[in-house]
Image (cartoon, rainbow, N blue to C red; front, side):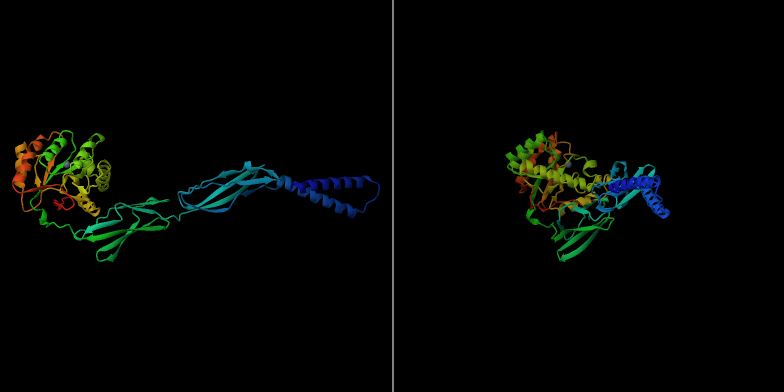
Length: 426
Ligand SMILES: [Zn+2]
């Protein structure tokens, strides 16, 4: 363009001076020659004028005019350029980029340029599409064992989508039988663009835990809840050691300075189980997830502190508690199933020493226990090792001696102990 204009200018100058010289000379020129000459001159001048003063600059888009990008990706505009008669005037371009890549749709990117009152525009179209399926994460194990007399309790899932965020409601669960004792649940999550993904959970139907296990009839299981405590736990451990019996401690979450107590419980051969995090019912039972989480946290902590993996649980207040309904309706029905599905076993009790309630002194604790004993069943005794619980401490040796003298077998709760459970009431 530039070169042509220079040529044009040169031609015009030559023609102009030639015409001028013609008119100046004395020789007569034929009129039609002059007309042709002037026409050519006029045309060139016209073209030059148009190009310089009327012609608009153009905006050239850099890259594709039509772009498709995946939602969630960052959109970087490549910009546009413009020149006029070889002069780069790109800096005059104003760009309006309003591409929201978190929402699918078509977006226009506008480029505008004002040059000597002449407005020039161009646009690019950006298509934001969503072809990424959501991700599903199962809460709980991928394989679950459910007793044949129980129903699988859905443990939940978390569905995340790059565009739609958490879309837990858009999940369809299909049950597909594999065999008589096994089926799978297929979870299909769909995002609002129609992308979907699936994940499976295997459910094994197992024999229910036998309640009619007579092999442990006449056994006595001493259980201590709510510890460890500096005040009580070491003294209880001393008595158990002296009497050469093993017991079970259902502990609540503990600080670093109680780690040695927990280690001692395990080192001296006792069983350890999970009770809770804080024992505040409003916290323990605010949601299914939070108690399940407590179990995992405690299990890990006990494992790293003592090296043992426990599968024993005692729910705060027992599985029959109704106080939990104040915080979460139906939570005990759900939790009791979920813990079993995940390979844990929970124990209530069939003898309450009432050392955290009605028993006023050591004698009453002793009487509550020995009066409850029976040879026709396993006996799970509820006691506590929280700070200041002297009456249990004072009654313990006599309880142990009574059991020994009357043909009971004292043992700790272990994998072959039949589950003693209450009736769920929430
Ligand atoms: Zn407790």
